Image 1: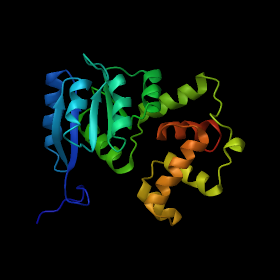
Image 2: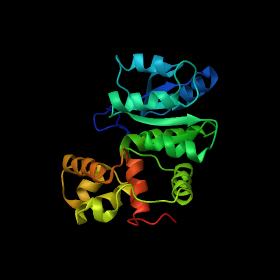
Image 3: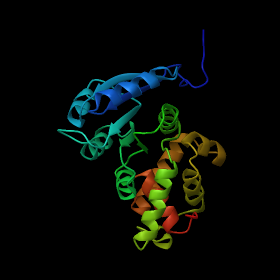
Image 4: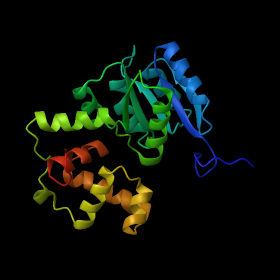
Amino acid sequence: MYSNPNFQASGEPIKVAIADDHILFRAGVKTALSMQPDVKIIAEADNGMQLLNLLKHITPDVILLDIQMPIMDGMSTLPEIKRLYPEIKVVMLTMHNDHSMISRLLELGANGYLTKNSDSEVIHEAVRTVFEKEYYLNHLTNKALIEVLRNKNPKPIVSPGEAKLSEKEITILKMMCEEKSTKEIADLVDLSPRTVEAIRDKLKTKTGAKSVAGLVMYAVKSGIIDSK
C-alpha cells in the first residue's frame, strides 16, 4: 500500500473546507490543494451562513475562511465556528494586510492568517501547520502581535505574580510560543498530550487569555518571552 509521511496517522488526508464568495479564487485554491496528496477538499461555501449549515453534516479538519463575504462574513462566522466546533482549525483569508484586523482575528481564535495573494505552497503550508501544530505564525501574524503590544501601552491581562504560574506552566507556555505541537511538548516534559492540553486550558484561565494567540500575547507582555 502506498504511504505518504504527510498523511495523518490514520492514513487519511487533511479534510479542508473553503468559504469564499469569489468563485475564481475558490476554484484556484481548490485546484492547487487538490494536487497535494495529503489534502482533500470536502466542501465549499459562498458565505458564513452556508458554511455553518454545511458543518452540521461534515467535519473538516481545517477551514479556509474569507473575511469579506455577503450575508455572513468571516468576522461573524469565526466565533461561531470556535463556539460550536472548537476542534476545527481556521485560517483566515483577506485581500488586506491590516495589523489591527489580524490581532483581532487571533484574539477571536483564528489559527492562522493569509493574504489572498499567497501562493499555493504557502496556503498548503498553513493548512498543514495548523493541523499539526494548531497555530500558523508567519511574518504577518508576528508583526501584528508585536505592533499591537508596542502601540497599546502593553500590560499583561493578569500580571505574572497574580497569575501564579508554576515553573512547569511557564515552561509549557514558552514551548507553545515556539510553535511546538502538543505532542512535541508532551514528549519534552514527559507528560501525556491530554495533560498538556489540560495545562494549556489552565493557563488560559489563569491569564484571562481566550486563545493560543492570547497566551502568546500574554507571554510577551509579561516578559516570559522577548517580542524583539
